[in-house]
Length: 350
Ligand SMILES: [Zn+2]
Image (cartoon, rainbow, N blue to C red; front, side, top):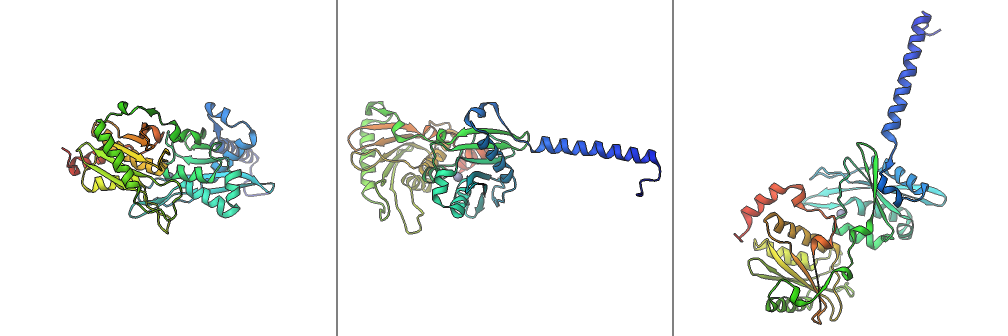
């Protein structure tokens, strides 16, 4: 007989209380642990195995380690797939370090898969990346992570899942929705480009001249030059430059840095020139730089930067960074007031 067994009445009461408590705990565990797909996500996750893998990945992502010491914004991500008859779950997390630099969740998890199982597994077995978030917004990967996912996965079929901590709903989208191929930038007659003809001619010539420079010791085929016109009427240009550490310097990023160095923060148009007769490739990382700069325009009530592709034969494609990098984010989203104050106190274009 145990210490609670002296009076039968008390024993029954205690047992009843234990049963109620146990039931409450299991109910609580059920509601807090079960993921469920949002209605509009069900069509994208056709088979039950894939759905279970997404849920298993979200459970693992919830516990993934991160070190976002600057923003304190955690990106916890994981994927799951079958390998040698077993389910494998691989996690990734973001890390930030000064100046501000970062290893992002997407590159972290995919590199982790490659380190454990090889590049072929990353390309053929990874069907989704699952993010664990307090709140799932419409945000997508940064430009650099888009480049990395395109380079390492079967990105045309890759899914992106976001599991929301508060109600355990899981929203699934296609990674392909984050991609806009240069072929899909609308081709336009030069008369439709909102620049005086002479200005456009000068920018094209300047971008072509820039392309003759830069550094191309490792770059194959993709070398480009870029030239920009600011609202203050100044032009800037830059070419891509590679290096032994593979820290590529991008042409749009390069000319933006020059303009910003001169406190000329608002650009009107950027022209990119590729190999003669070829449409230039605009990497997503470079689109991210352009998108950030275009959000400066928006913060100051100016139109977005016009992005113009030239194939060197008088033909043009025209778009904006907002269209070329769907669902992007910039400082304007995170700290709009700080950005406005910064621009007001730094710009020379009053
Ligand atoms: Zn990223």
